[in-house]
Length: 255
Image 1: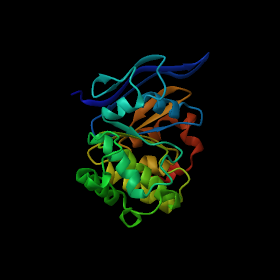
Image 2 (image 1 turned 90 degrees about the vertical axis):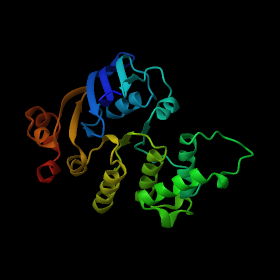
Image 3 (image 1 turned 60 degrees about the horizontal axis):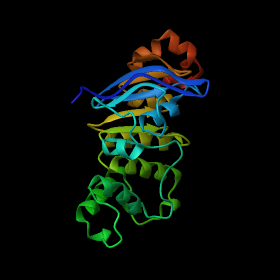
Image 4 (image 1 turned 135 degrees about the vertical axis):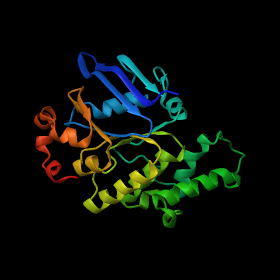
């Protein structure tokens, strides 16, 4: 197995004449947590869509544990051990919290859709789903219809769905967007707990979240990765200061 869980090698993406991702390189080590930051329109969500297979690359290569992901569909990439969340909460609003998590568990355990198989009889799926609910702190909301959860609870549920399949590489797209400070602090602690031993790549605008979670910070500006370094070095990087961090005063007070 490669020492790198995820590698982006000269990755490029164009839509017509518009070049959105311009020869990006990034290597994420096994168990590392990297936050991708950058101004609006920098290409962060496009980059996530390329990694997860929603978009095809225009050039370069993306590798998971040393194996190219080019040409694979999103569900095939997921089965190889990469899972992602989205900016907009992506859950089954009419299913219960437990049913949402169980749906995510089934494929990872090898179960196919079957009209005659009773889900309540699948003990391993039941136990795995209950374990995830305990991890994300939603046991007491187990039977609640997901659409009735608070916004912060829905985001926690989505994180639970993302990790339920047992993926080793997790992509989180703005996991604390729209949260209050207390909700954001709780989300950071949840992310820290559920990604222990896993590899995390995260897009996030909240600098206190970024500096509190990331081992390294990658800075994407207009489709180009201008820096990737430790939080302390990123904070002190003149190019990063000029292009992005100077407009985020929270950086000054984050630790």
